Length: 193
Image 1: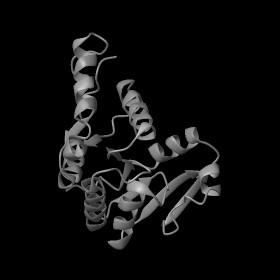
Image 2: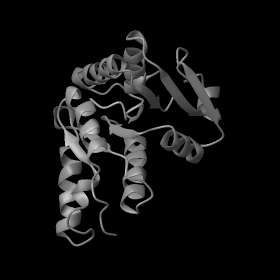
Image 3: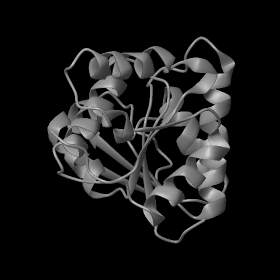
């Protein structure tokens, strides 16, 4: 591994999902992050996969930075054990703060909010606003339809060939940190837009 990865932003569901493997994978990723000394940057929630990955990092002695908007904190959804909780006024500031605090991104299963976060960070990369690694953890094939959609966008002429390089897809949690390290050591060439 490389010491260049200090913090990893994880976008994931505020629900646990219908398959136990989703939480198992989030927990395994959190353990690996703690073992490597990688700080978790996440949406700050105590519930769902967000809570699972944060709990695992904390249980392993790692650092957890939550970023939560005031209205969600007011609903008492903030993780009480976070090493640091950054309270922001709105969702836009939340995403920008998470971006600024992270060296790379990992996308776990989630719903509409996870998709929105992922597409924004992928779009920023497409527009050359950053070149940070974006790893999609395709747990139990959850993101396979999304990967197919990326291919369809390219073959239908709505993106240039090579846009699939905006993300790196892995199948197992133990592959995430290695994929990030590999890309930090040999950054991808920015895509055309």
